[in-house]
Image 1 (cartoon, rainbow, N blue to C red):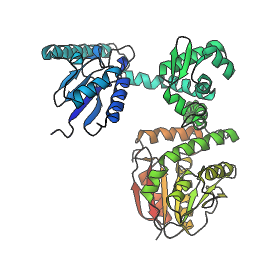
Image 2: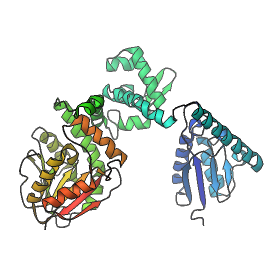
Image 3: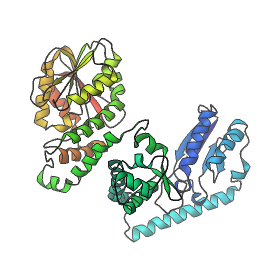
Image 4: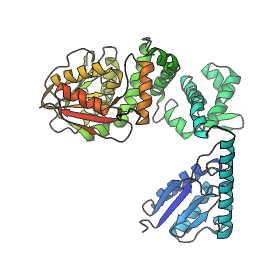
Length: 449
């Protein structure tokens, strides 16, 4: 069975630096060019493109195989893509200059490369060389810190379309030699481009990391700068049981709310679709931060009124996001402490998003009881958070986030589905179910009867 006229397998295997392979020879650019060309020519429903691991012709990549004919292409550059799409996919004529035609030679080359690879694996194992993925995990902080420093210094804005290292250093008030080293590293990572002695931003860094970018995320990413400082104390936090220092200032709060707004805005539509707005006229958003979820629910239903409860220090920012969204008439704010205050009464929906991981088990059990009291008959509680398996080892993002809360809170952690079920049942909720969403977080939904 072949559901598409053509099925292309394109190698994009990532290998250690210096090892021959398609990725090192520019497969990402070739694959991107192929996707764009197929879209431009209206062939995305006729040609299925699948990226894959090594095809065994590592020194001659980028490589791809086209089925149903089984045509093996090698050395395909972005500039070759229009010809392949036009000649092969539209007119049925493979591009001969790029095709491997000697099947025996092809098989021999693949076997030879495979044997070399296996011999290398055995040699590394015998020598006790650390696996590449483990080594990369250990050194991962290097690239992370490089990018965070660039964000902290606003390097991408300073570079813009074109700038020399000395110019950037002057703009960001930094040392010229050190700035050049940083810019070279950012180029190696792929967030800058270098021509001669001048640097320029890439499309990705221009869009997300420079002032005026289409999706400027600098303020949200500054939260990660703060997290870096917290995570540097992980060893002491494991020894003592807590890493929270209680020294968060107004700037930290601004970064945090900006980061949470970005995250929430990306997921809000999926949450609204999963929960629905039928029968919801009053909604309470507990610890709602920027109000992103309340905004999304209000936009989904003209008859819904939402109220965001959060600390007085947060609410000026909340009101700014609400005004920007144009829903001031239907989304209001109320100062309160979700750890201890009564939450009100008569709500049809109470949302607790990205809150439970900040609290201890006992605090969550108490919060569920106050949420129950805030709901009218038939009202629903919706909790969104990382929800771990019984062993608390998956999903990976949730298990790692428990460490984030160790270094950043007094008693916070990610919790398991069984724990949420127990808290909600003890509070009086019935029909408690887990709703799975795409991404690392899920919902727990319970009803007051």
